[in-house]
Length: 338
Image (cartoon, rainbow, N blue to C red):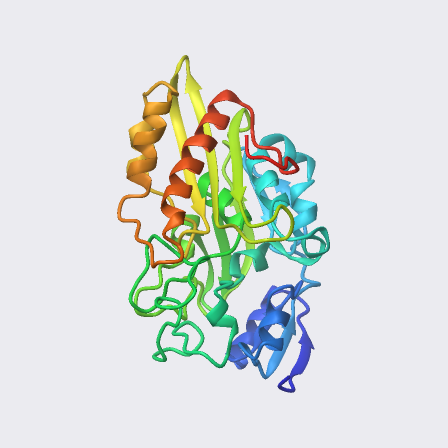
């Protein structure tokens, strides 16, 4: 392990001051991903700036009926917070579908947005990887790519974003609040994570000297009709091969509003406004779900080992929409996908 200095930030302004003075430094909160990256020689920061004591650990209602989540709120605390369980159960279910209880106790909300891909080649420092070493090539395209992306890929990278929480936040249309030397700004969740393009080393549109302070959830949490389905190789402690977050709002027998987001299939949580438009004003029937799935997966491309993901995702989308429409969300402890 490369030697590094350790400092602690006293407040947000101090954190920004420290990272601005040494851009190669890294913030550390729960450390559940960063420490792995350091151990695998993927990251080697000269300084770690501890932000775990910043006063960003509250979950509060906003004046317009939404909820503001501090970036330091542990994943487990967020999943079991009464406001989240009651008004945003889709988010609670997605968080509890991810990682282990021990990791959820340590991982922070802000850090979850910044966790990096679990592509095998990214973690193997002996192989080419454009995300880890820009310009070196992508070993996954012609390699063992069972876990890799089928949507939004580029010739430079086919990695996937690993978070479950972010899939639900994308569906809920959360907003990310950040602060930096130039002041504060907000980033719509749809614009926070990037597709790989020819710069796969950049996962997000967060500037290097900025810090996530809060994540804002809008008033509508779709608490009546929702479901989160995660398909993985084993029930516990595995990243998604495919995950689907679905939320609906009805007006009589027809769908008034709907959100669908996919995980495990792209470099960021995957949404398609066109697919959601297909469903608005329709009855909640299998034919409509199939049409939406086809639009959502338009352009999907496998790379050999992960070809199965296209059909798997289609079936998962249809199933999740059906569960959401019936108001019978998938249980995170069921051994079977219903």
